[in-house]
Image (cartoon, rainbow over all chains, first blue to last red):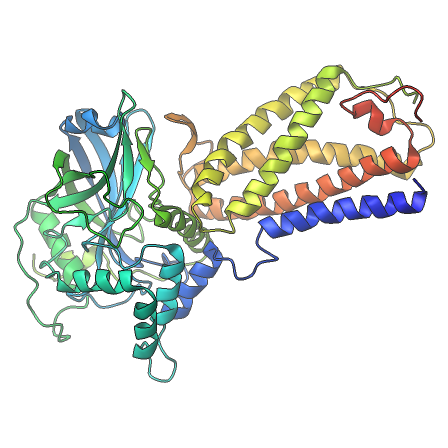
Length: 354
Length: 183
């Protein structure tokens, strides 16, 4: 080989490796949906709110514990299901990227939890008070963000774009109908929070069960029937749960729903039949609320893929997308300075009657 | 350097094993942060234990390097080339140690569990501090790009030795012996 052709060969080899690296990193495929693009879509819809979570931006830290009754050990070897108590740090929030949005009956409420297990493992889960999720793929989630982007002229989403989105995603149209038909409960305390995504429980013997889970409130259901007229405090949901926690702990039962063969585990827009067996595996008790500016939940990324051995992700494509996007949101907000959150713990102490 | 002067079998094994692992790690890292596809979970689940494996291997390799320095560089190289060779090698070692440590540290600073396999996980090595996480997260990316650039330089230099200088430097680390009768 001549020196010249050797140099050409070396240059070609180095360029090939560098190009492969650039391709895998997404620099050659700008249309690829990555966490950065997803976050930019959130920011375009909601405006810039440095320091805040890009979704579920308005929230409140809560702390308490989980008492496992041991019933879950039949399905999962996860330490969290062994009989006993583990500490929990959580966050009550409203879905959406607006940290100063006013509470309304239609706002989607969420509960995120981190269970700290005795062997040093953790379980993190983020649940929503809706029966199904509006989309079943990350791409559809992104398209929904584009479709609900406020029109700069009107400040409101363009109905034509939403109609277009729903026509392209009939599964989302069906899911939104189910979500819309649900009557909101009167507050966080009597909300049922659903995992929506499916997971796999792995038992000590190796058997695998496809499941979804929910935190089912002990507080009796009451409808949120007041009209969203603006007469209510913009933080009425958070103020109420803080006031309740001043009085007494709030409890939920962790109910695990077992799928039957054929129940979709990769489609969060579809509810499983109501007759599916449910197992009560323990009780969540929330004792205290803290504003998130100083609360224990502030620097926790409630990544749904932080799972103890014995709980595994399903084939639901939303799980990886949530994990990747939450990581990006956490990285961004951790280097930004943040103005005070809308919900402050003292507000309940300084005037709002319990 | 004569053609018989080679690094020891252990050194060559460690070199090529780590070459594969580090390159795989760089591609996994840059790939996983650029996607929301279901591949993300699998990639990140490999990334953490693989990083720790590289940290353990590079420590073994450094000890081996001190005990078995290997053949000297050939005499024809200029002072600048010698300096570049030495500096890039130590830069590679430094980056291979720092990247996993910064990765472990950044997960520690955001109290994200460093799961190796199943219930086996590593303890945090830094306090829970979001600002520290932000700094280390950025450092991790910059060090990874630096490692990729250093790898490209190292790979290019190895090819120059193999195809242009033909001075035995590549052969001294090559996994196979040169066939007899060929230059």
